[in-house]
Amino acid sequence: MQARVELFSDSICEVAESPFWHNDALWWVDVNPGVLYRCSEAHGIIDTWQLGDRTGAVVPVPESPRAFYAAQQGGIHQLLIDGADCSLTLIVDPEPHLPNNRFNDGKLDSRGRLWAGTMSISLDPEQGALYKLEDRKSITKAVDAVTLSNGLAWSPDDTAFYYIDTTTRRIDIFDFDAAAGSISNRRCLRRCEEDWGNPDGMTVDSRGFLWVAFWGGSCVRCISPADGSVQNVIRLPCPNVTSCC
Image 1 (cartoon, rainbow, N blue to C red):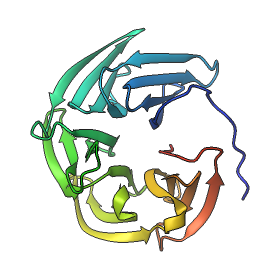
Image 2: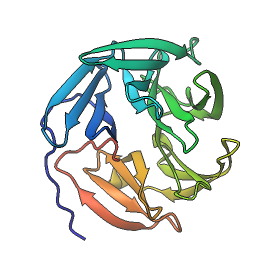
Image 3: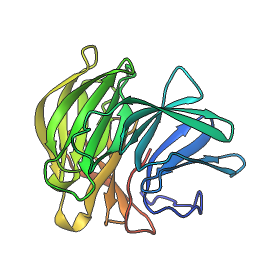
Image 4: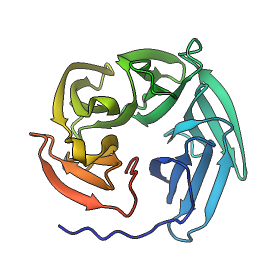
């Protein structure tokens, strides 16, 4: 199937990341300068907020239209947006002993828990981790010895959790217990070919298929959850594709 690719916004970012739809608009961040963008689908109006630090992901809090999580270099913050203004309040910094680390990709599971992973800015091996934040305060480490924590996604039936540590070149799958918020039985769904680029962010569609962005690969690939086979490829006019939603 040939996909139709159109330019949605011509805003120039160093590293555009963490796209999500919220309140009839597309939101994303520019990681290094820590800028949050919002673009109305109907009007194409761009709004921006300065978040003051490297920001890997911004995730809306379901029960509040103005509240978000901001996963940053200094930890996980609560972000409140009030018109053109915003405020940040630290919730938790699980790695104060690793000042060279920052958070990267983050998403909510079906029960509203935030899952977000860290990485060393200089990509020091196995210095990061994947964390789970519950009740806006309780944080636990879910995966240790991570180098570049990236894509996160869940199967539509909530029984599987998918995860990418980019440097492993793998798309991994875990068993997921939605009630307990626990993952187990890690195994490799697909090892990505060297000439594909590096697996980055991802999402799951309504059929349970994975859509994986490839940094250095100029594309998003559709991966079968059954056997890891490639079902589709969307080519994009840029080399470094970070994520999709």
